[in-house]
Image 1 (cartoon, rainbow over the protein chains, first blue to last red):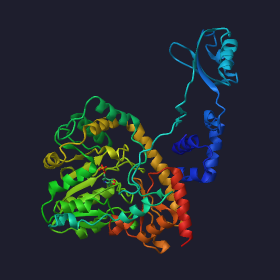
Image 2 (image 1 turned 90 degrees about the horizontal axis):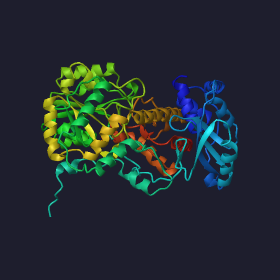
Image 3 (image 1 turned 120 degrees about the vertical axis):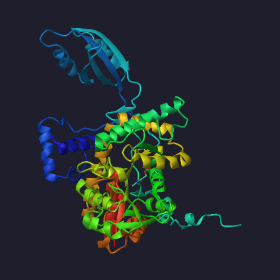
Image 4 (image 1 turned 90 degrees about the vertical axis):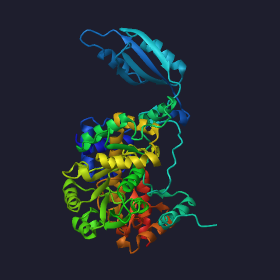
Length: 163
Length: 385
Ligand SMILES: Cc1ncc(COP(=O)(O)O)c(C=O)c1O
């Protein structure tokens, strides 16, 4: 990883569909050098995936999302890993993290409706061995996601010409 | 009734872009590369500190020199970044932007008839401020062959026995030129030899893309004859807050302070408190913005050269300064027609002094999407010539 790689990653993270020649100009590389570097970054799994940030709410297909905190008794030899890897396989789990603090695992879960979330938690998650406690928090509104603001803002007006 | 306007005020030339401004306001979908300020919002942590200051009832005057804590942080910041040592008690003055700093610096040193050498192309305020202070401004042209850096031999030619001071600004508005240490040394030697004072406007110092900024006051023998102006407008995207600072040896700082206390009293307290936050916690935001300017510069300058507007690589600030010579148009005609025909606003280089004729100032402090669209339109314009 050098400075040029960092430029590539930054601009791709903002816009995965940015034209090659623009990246090349910004990083002061040739287009083939950029392609080569991107391939390399993918191979190293630094670039995991090219994806799209979607406001499903706005698309009219909004799902219900919840943060679910779990208290987990770690397993001998495995710690939290085995349980976490098991939970991570559920389609409904969008992200899963081990946290410091009162709870251990934190899940971000999406489903069609409240009912499905309730069923998912009570039927799939809570009964798993070693899970001692769950706390479900429904997400009411998203203001910012992955660094992108989800609300409209009045921009300050700059004068169109100044010295 | 008499005409009450003073001859001094009357003699200040009118703004070179009034006409553009009016035309621009009457048009829609204009992409403007004519704005000399950052397009980022002030980092939120900084704005928040300003809001908090007001909430806490910090709405009074401060000491004329500015809040002591701010002066201490400025002293530490420039000490760390430039290796210059200024005493917060007697050598740093908080001003209402570099604009005020420039005015009081010139008034503090100019006697009637003194000549002020001004490296051009340059920010439009220098010559009028020198005139208002009673001085006579003498342009010293910087040309593209020398990457728009001030050349020792050209400076020498302009020095007379009336020369009192040299005003310069690197990284430069409008050219983006930067003077490295070795270049500054050559100029410094002349300044010392001719017993001149130096006013160095370093407001773009944070926006230096190749290597690091050299403060001219850090060179041997120059600190005692330099007034350095700097501020928060460009580095922290704080143009509307009106806060900057002046650094100078005690006698000069004291002279500037005397004028400052009568014309400004102090810089706004909430802006000073926001500036404190900028120096304490704004570094990362600053670096993020500088990095974005660098990407835009690379993108835009490559584009200019590709579409047939040759442009030297600006090493600092956020301006590209391409030549229009090959198009057969002069800079004013080019800018007027580009606006009228393709709705892209740029500033003709001659606005920044004769040395800027034949060039355009394009501020790339706009989003990359706008830069790309502007390039498309400029290409179409050149194609249609
Ligand atoms: C070279 C230069 N000096 C000074 C200023 C004004 O700075 P401030 O906002 O600190 O008054 C500008 C603003 O465009 C500038 O370009």
